[in-house]
Image (cartoon, rainbow, N blue to C red; front, side, top):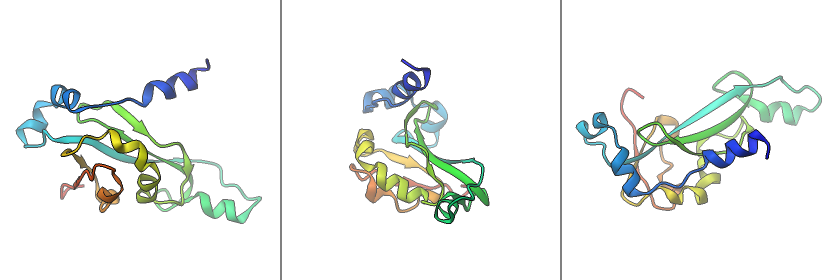
Length: 140
């Protein structure tokens, strides 16, 4: 095994209601957020701008970074455990598009649990197989 393969296998985890209930931080419980399954986060990583092909150059452009980048989304539990992530994609597709693409793998989010997300993930509940609603605090 290569270390990258081992890391990828260890970073895609199954979660269930029992695990989420046992590991929910007290700070979340105090705010009435004990039914939060995950906190999705999009991350862009800068890359060298490819100049050989204009289609590829445009597909790499990130509005977040104002430069060429690759993008991924990761989902972590309220306790901070990362349990799901997309592959790296060229940065042009938005976060909503990646959530839609990754939807079949998000069935692991239990029914009745919510996502605590920023505005970039607004209106993505329809992509989650269990219709996990989005909570977006005003400061995000």
